[in-house]
Length: 190
View (cartoon, rainbow, N blue to C red):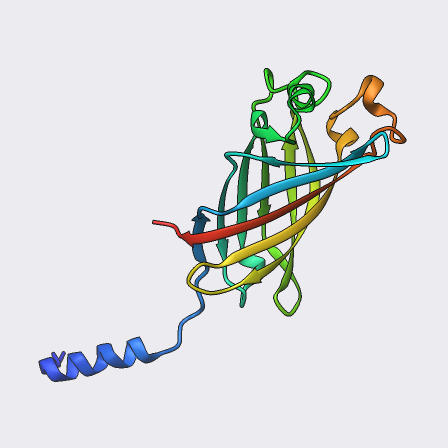
C-alpha cells in the first residue's frame, strides 16, 4: 500500500481546477423592496374603480435560466385594501367581501414557473382567499439588475372565492373577473 504525498502547490492547483469547473446556476433568493405595489381594478355599476393592497410582502427564488425551479410566496393583509373611497373600503372588509374579521390575509404561492419567451414567464400558482384555495396564473416580466423588477398581471374570479356573494353576485353590477397587477422591486434576501 503506497501513500502519495502532495505538495501544497499541488493541492492548491487541484482546488483551483475544481473551482474552475462550471457549476449549475443557482436560483437567487429575493425579498420585496420599497416602491413595490399590488393593485386591483374592477367596475361597479359601470364605473371603473381601482385600489391597492398596503402592507403586502413578497419572497421569490428565481433564476431566469431555470424558471421551473422558481418559487413565489406573497402574503396580502386584506384590511389594507385601499380604493380611495372610505365607504367602499369598509364594504370590502365586511363579511360579504373579504370578511377580514375571519380571514385577515390572502396568500399566493407558486412552485415553478413557465418561460413564455424573452423576459416573460407564467407562475401557475394557488391563491388562498377567504378559506378557499384555487389556481390562479400570474403572467410576469422579469427585469434583471441590481434591483430586479417583477411586473405581473392576473385575473381573479372573485365568486370562486366567495368574494361579493349574495346580493353582490350580480355580475352585471360587479363583474366576476378582477384584474390584479403588481410591480415588485426586489433585493437579495439575507
